[in-house]
Amino acid sequence: MRVEHLGERGGEPIAIVTCLHGREQCGKAAMEALLDRGLSITGDVRFVVANERAMTAPDGPQQYLDDDLNRSFPGDPDGRSHERRLAAELLADVRDCRVLDVHSTLSDGRPFALFLPENDRRLVAATGVDIAVDVRNRAGRGALIEFVDGVSVECGLRGTQSAVDNARTVIRNFLAALGAIEAEFRWADPEVYEITDTIDCVDCTFEGENFTRVDAGEQFASRDDHPIRASEPFYPVLTSRDGYEEMLGYRAEKRGRLSTLE
Ligand SMILES: [Zn+2]
Image (tube, rainbow, N blue to C red; front, side):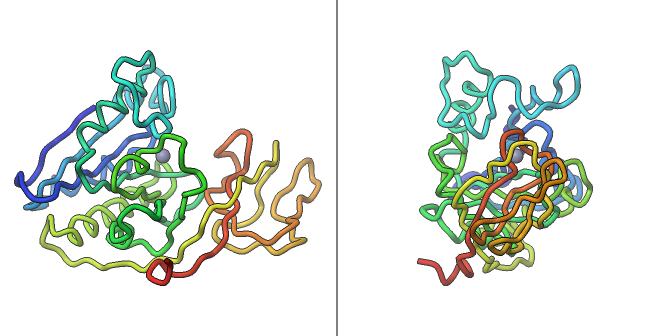
């Protein structure tokens, strides 16, 4: 793990956490590009490159070595798993920070935030992205944002330049909104989708579109050329053709704009 302290100590610290998943390197690339161009940081900012060993694995980058790091928090300093030890170490470095956790995905090219409603929702607005997913029904699985005041952002398709470009925009907006750099920014008021359930469909091919409503009776997937239809209407979220093994992704309900929610 690499932790770079940027800006001036003091005030409320901010952490930009990248590479919780080893193949998702858009945040690291974006942060390095911003720093190369002389981004002037005045706030107390920590830039974290989390799972370096997964990034430099002998057979090429892996998502993780022993356990999914973003399912390993709060971690265990004496654990046998690399990621359980790393989670404990990382958490000690960012526990007092407002955290932006940067990912990329196999599901959708549009950037979207993942958040827990009990965390400071201004952090979601500070990302500047127009779609947000309330993941409270997936909580309790050891994700970083369950243990810090923070928000995760999926910046685009893994390995693409557009994910890096989106990550740069999100990081810059976040730092500016929280007063750590001088730059223009916007407070977003994203449309919120709340995950309700998984879409369990073994060997299915997803044929819908993320964040686009599937009506009751509508075909959204197929298996061996047979249509799979929805019994209830839902919005697919984090759904990809081959992103997960045992499930297609998640069902969500649309809740409205962030600012209108209780
Ligand atoms: Zn990820």
